[in-house]
Image (tube, rainbow, N blue to C red; front, side, top):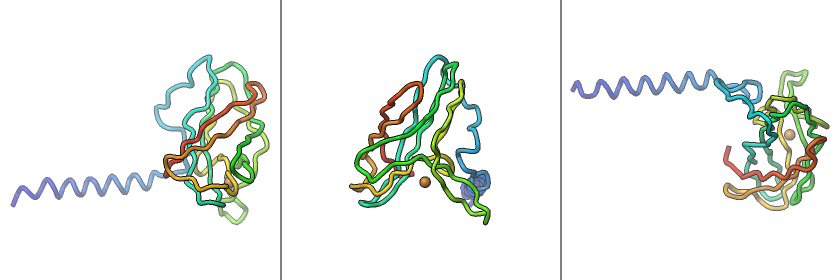
Length: 161
Ligand SMILES: [Cu+2]
């Protein structure tokens, strides 16, 4: 029955990999991805936009990454959208009791040559009291307001985390 051996070894390796992956898990916003490419020069863009699923009347979050490849900082001053009671910029923080809370952010600076990530566990958009349910395959239109770039329309495809 020596043919069973490679399978057993593979199982152990898969198990080890799974355990390692769990141990390394940290909030996405605090940890830059390894080997991250530099921000493309001379461009300003908002990329990797998505939103979570929501039930009708429910609340969900939206995410994106600002890539400011220009020489000047820009400031995200707000966000608007239809189809919900309101939309806010939030940040996640550690409360005095050690639990994680979230609170509104009024403005956010996008420094020159850097990325600003809205990601689970960190900065996020809060889409509050959706008029309709959001399912995978739907999308949400929002408009970001930048001090320098003005209105920046953005489509958030709905993803299942
Ligand atoms: Cu929030």
